[in-house]
Length: 314
Image: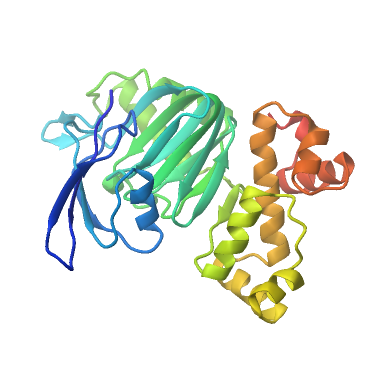
């Protein structure tokens, strides 16, 4: 199943209405919605192949998400299974419902205006409703997604987060994708879905998030380190390039990302290392590629951050 995204744009300067379509960008389907693009969200639109400066975008889909009506109302929780190949990309999109995105196999890199998350097979990502996001696959990915209607609970998380997946939660996710719709509350299927919803609230959050700064000077640093994780420039060298005091750069990083420059760069390097591990690259090569002087130094920092050595993480 796939859908096409239709964009209806109106340029404020000319009043001219421009209609275009982005390439097929997901195997999921979204409900019709209108939202205002601004700041980083504009780049999400451009990634879909639509050139625009200021615009309203109308996203429509010919079909709905799998929330079938039961006795006049839609189901609170449903699930879907999708498989992808290496380097497949789900283009920027958003849903009117919350999602728990989980891969039985493979690694996903999920990007949004507020940051990027690396999601290995033993983890899942909670994506709140209406947040624009894209997903890049590292290796073969068997994705299993849980959709949660926003009014199904008052306790749904309001921010993106990578979470640990317990044995119970994994079993419930795999069972959920086999449930036939519509289901009734008092049945076995209904109880499985309700227990799944309860388990989502118990998930511990993991440090697999890289915040994206909005300051144009920090964006230069972000883009450089993302492209070259082994970049050796110190905060003093970056400050000199921007003709700023190093303390100003430090304050900007803390204000916009919650990390110091050193902490943010370490997080960027370790998340890049996770992608390389998922591709099967050698630890010694990964260590050098992300700026560590030796595999031992890299492994020590990796274990400290993720609680396991790189050799046994996946």
